[in-house]
Image (tube, rainbow, N blue to C red; front, side, top):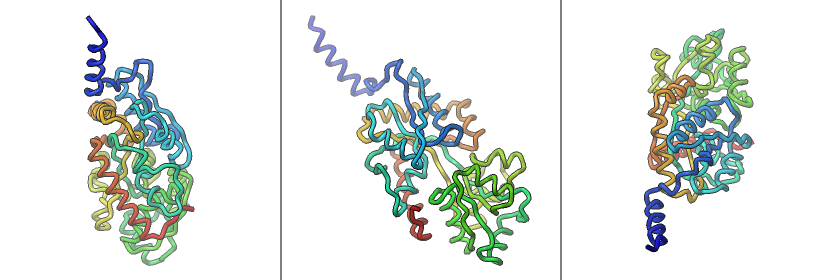
Length: 321
């Protein structure tokens, strides 16, 4: 019996079913992260890697390649193999803000060089001030800012970051004037807000949840209507400033040319991981919420938020420094 036609037929069948994209057990499923270990992007990647590794029957590996606001990692994946062996943990900022920023020189075009695989986690933003701040509510802070234009300050994780743009949205929509104080990351920004050297910070809940729980920061508002189970009575920013809502996310993207079968396989593995109660609890404890979106839905989320952040950038006249 001639076994070659049978082998060829089996190969074609496996390719059509997507099984051909299963990695060998000694080849890890790699998730590349553009930020340092310990942050919310890295935490999401490690949860996804563990779940995907279990689904694939192989090791899930996180590869941190920091720098250039995540674009060292993004370029590494975009220029790398498109066989489904590695993907990028793609947070909201590099996918929606950086491409809209005038003067920003990017090594890749995220719309052309990356493809959406799945959204994995939702990041509620919060408005916080120091525990010793005189402002007990966001309404009090807004009233003070209106009474003394330019006297109050807001901290951010850096110029052009989502924290910066969120505060610019607050300024514009609340009709107040605040002075921007940029930092190199959310952690030092939170330190100065705690110390009273800056009045307010809008950032990911995951960046400051421990300081809120520990009483160093006062939670003035949740920046989205969904809120957070641990803070059920926290005011909602859209109720204080109508129309103002800030929601972040952390998804997974692959390189251009990644086969549809491989995309579907990763997406299903991510969905399964987020349904695991142990893994989802790890996200929740870090101030993140499991938020699976399939490739098509995730693509619409990226497009929607890119339009919204682009409008904010143009309205505030912000350019890359």
